[in-house]
Length: 378
Image (cartoon, rainbow, N blue to C red; front, top):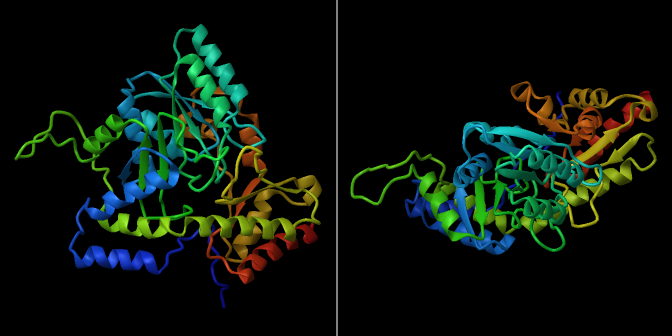
């Protein structure tokens, strides 16, 4: 019999979500928008400490709207973390912009302030500073926001925070995503909390969020008929999905604790194995450990990352390499990059282990034993 599948990061829902969705059905608020959307936005603002929030169809939509709100023009550059998922960078191209990728540091795996400083100084000399910096907070851990924000202020460049993977994390006591002019969150099915599909755009500026809502509802002008004076998008969240999100917000702290416990389990399980290291937790905040990530050193461990991934796959266990850097992606060939060596190394040796908040001890032991067998076999 095939062993039961262990997923990398599966949704984890409970009774509250079901009751709130049932209320949406009972009141027939099924179409986009509705009271749950309004409540979800208010509750999210309180949770992360942002003044204003717009619930959207995805985190990608939030990134896209943030660039549209800035007025990004064709040919203008936007700096972006290289070690990230493509959704951080794709919207730059939607608007005709040019991505420029910045390497990460080893302390947090997030954008390296030294590399960003190098890139900004280079562009200042060339009199073409970027329209914005998209700072990604990776795998549940905040980047060094103070250092990045100080550089953006120095050069007069807008900071956008992509906190899609870092809801529930902290940076010096605040939520990643709330220091930049705009912040982005994702509620995709594999995130620490989910609305199936969804995202949130936050800002301290009410005018930006009001405009985002306008753009996200097809830019419909205030008229009794359908009238449009500018191009808009179908980016708003539905009332049903917002109901799920409200229930998920109530258990966010529990989900964070569960994922941190998963990482601690793996750390104990592999403590005697040479050649396996964990993504470090940066000293400036608390990581959610959304995904537990390890680095495999083949000469010490005995086999490389891919051999471990394939061994897990043979046991019906899903694992995934660390993000392939954007500067290595075929679609971004030719884009300027500052650094890249650290991101490339993490990709070549990094592996994400099953990290769902609903994993059982038995499932965690299955994963750990499969990894240990790789070391023994070597």
